[in-house]
Length: 69
Image (cartoon, rainbow, N blue to C red; front, side, top):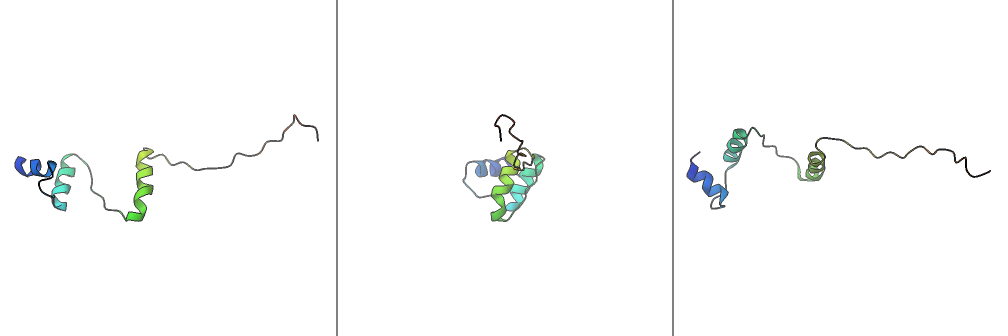
């Protein structure tokens, strides 16, 4: 890919083809992945959490020994 073409992509003077995006990504040791739109928010959350998966669980109720029954 020429420097001229890369400059045109960066300045939005031309829209890159998928093959150009793949070449740019490969140069930066990245992968291009297409995902269904409905899965995008969940994938963005996963990436934002740096791959940590959180689950929400209710804490077990402990008996309250301060109140007489």
